[in-house]
Amino acid sequence: MPLAAFFFWEPGGGCGRITAGGLGTSACSWWAMVWEASSDAVKVTESRMTNRNRHGHEPRKHHYVPEFMLRPWAKRWRPNQILLRGYYWDMHARRLRYRENGIGAFCYRLDLLTLKGRAQNRAILESRFFQSIDEKGSAAVVAMAGRGPEGLSADERCDFARLVLSLEWRRPATIDRLRQEGRAQLMAGLDNDPEILEAFRAQDIAVPPSEYAEGTLGWSFEDRAVLIVQGLVDSKEVGERLINANWYLKRLRREHGSFVLGDRPLVRTHGLDNEAATWFVPLSPKLGFFATQHLGALKLIKRASARTIVAKANWSSAQQSERYVFSTDQSCEALLSKLLKPGP
Image (tube, rainbow, N blue to C red; front, side, top):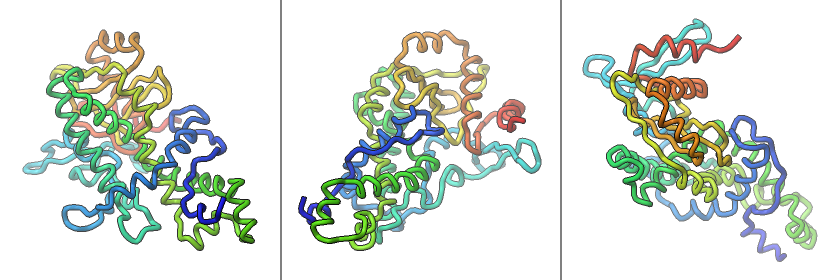
């Protein structure tokens, strides 16, 4: 391979498998999906070259739970103030506390998705890729709440599925893993590519290809790893499985109680790659989304009482939350105190 071809190299060869601790997938499937998603990540992003917000600045607050998903849990907790109440366990006081603030003050991290190796378009993932998902996903949620899952168009169904998938892949833990382990995997794939190594020997270049790429070409393997999140969100295999699953909305009446929302909204009984997975996302305190390919699981959900569904859904949302659980119902505080309290 001519050395010139090295400039256009995109990761796509075989890689080692890493145990997917805590991500709900099988031992090798998480990195298998990452590697498959990596080949077109840079190209996809380069086609979206506008990333200024409406104020003309690159946004630094990157929300891993879209603000429109938080809004239904905002309430007039104080006179003339509509606020979110986020419950959490205070490790020092050893009791349940809550924080009240505006919607924009929760579920974000500064520069979570920033491409640090770029001089421009550093926030393009947040301001273009995920902004588009959130805008279309929000419209799909409104449509589904009004017409039910069966009333969605094919495009609306796809838009909602992309939103659901994005909730897992844009989490800080996932992005951190891409930055750290993904960078190492991409560098190793380059340094172990036989054709590239042969081209380097022919040109008498002694440094490893990854070192040459970063030092001479100005590549950022960390940025390239973060860009992979696009391919993960748009995974054809997982997306089709969700789109073709049985979708169901559970609507609650006043006497049924209400759903809480965790700062990790997507709840699954199995991993992203498991055909037996049941998916749950609270859409509002009175509306919950379920999806499953398993007809037996769907029948159980439909037959269960509303109170049973609320209890199980809220238990799952609280158990997997990373810090905050949002609720509009003060009567849930005793339950949240039990669920959020760390075990012995």
